[in-house]
Length: 148
Image (cartoon, rainbow, N blue to C red):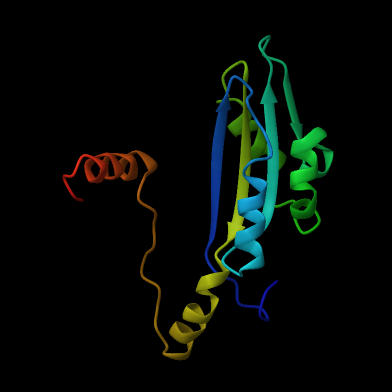
């Protein structure tokens, strides 16, 4: 754990790669975010469903080729937080001939803010995340010159 026993908020992402076009291109950015103390990758799982529907699930340490080399550094610090049931439920939604990365990460940047809230006797009432489709709509509106 980072900075004693206080953890920052923990988020997960599932990203899909249609046509099984998975590569290691996201690893350098994840590594940069970790090195800069913005996030800490807690767990990372890869899921591949071939064109016949056969499923393969594996950890970053078992990825081969260029992608494997790119994820090798990240895999040294991951722990198995995702349960087999979590992974199987997500894998069930994966279409044929596609792959996915399932990422769990701690928002390390928020630890000092959380400590300040605790020191101020603040109580967390709620927290959430704006859905990806809503963010995409806003991004499109901004790109079209419409603002948010």
